[in-house]
Every structure is written in structure tokens, then in C-alpha cells.
Length: 222
Ligand code: CA
Image (cartoon, rainbow, N blue to C red; front, side):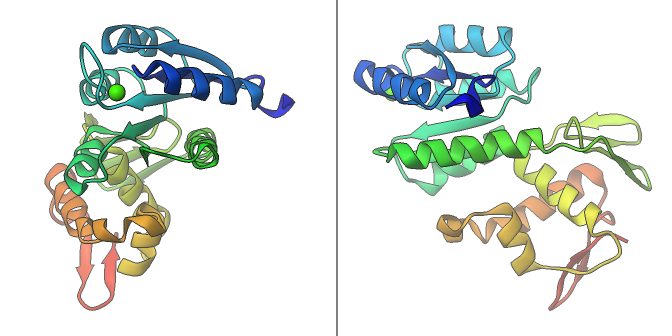
């Protein structure tokens, strides 16, 4: 229990029973929990407090979860675990592009929420203070920011993960399999073809030559 006492979580969910049971379960796990039952209060809290993570429902009265995420990402990198009612690739892709850290599809198992919550918090906390510089690209692995020619680049969480992973393996060919395993969990095999989309987006943002394709092998940053 004591393990999480310093962790503060915001839950934004409009279904009263679900909100109450999630909040209670997380408090029993030792988290400090704030709640909001509509989009506007959720955004207000999310922007005004440094939470360790936010559990964010998609369908909300007022502004919806996607809009909250989009606005929040302009100022904060708080880990966000989305609750989505529909297991549709379209929705999940939208979330990835908007900077969500992970998803749980309703109806969910509480243990799954706990596990994913711990994972997003751990990933966010395991930051190093290294800044990696590769040509015109600078990667701040503490802030999870990327700069191109000294200008901050708008980059999604997945794109960032791709760039960071390749940068940490600079000079090596990273196989597509390695990237899949790093970027997507085992339940996301349907999203594997998105790897090409992420690579293409990163090239648009950081220069076409930033990531080299090693045909038949994978990708490489020289
Ligand atoms: Ca809802």
C-alpha cells in the first residue's frame, strides 16, 4: 500500500458507478485520487495539477476525452491512460496521434487498469537526463522533447518512442520486429502496419534522411 502513497491520479469518467469503483480501488492500492465527472472539470484539473497519471474516458459530457488530451499535450506530458468503449482501430489510432500513452477498452478488468497505470507511470519516471544530438536533431530524453534545427517539434508519444529507440541504437540496424516489440504490446498486432506510418511522419518532421531504410532488415539512424 505504501508504495503508491506519493502518487496522485486524476480519473475523468462520467459513469458514476464506474468512477466510484475505480477511485475506491485505486485508493485501496494507495494512490491519492482526484475525480472529475465531465470534460471541462477534467481539463481544468489536468492542466492545473501535476498528476502522476490521468485515467481519461473518451465519451464525456462537455469536451470529450480526445479534446482534453489534445489541449493538455500543449502544456503537459502527464501520462494518460485512455478508457475507450470501442475497440476500434480508428479510435486507437486517433489516440496515439493525439499523445495518449496507453488504452484500456471497456469493459475492463481492474487488474489490467492497475498494470497499465503502473506501466505508464514507470515509463514516465524512468527518464534519464541525457540529451542526444544527431545532426540537426536534438532529443531530450528527460522531457521527451525533440528539436529540429533548435525548434521544438510536435511529436506524438509513439513517434517519440520510435525516434528515441533508434537514437539509442544509433549506427545499428534495428529490425522491424524489434520496433514492433518496443512500440506496440502483444495485443496490438493489428496496429503493426502503423510502423511505416510513424516512420513516414517522423521523416516529415525531422528530415527524410534522418531514418534510413535497410531494405529487408529494418531501420537505422546513422
Ligand atoms: Ca463516458
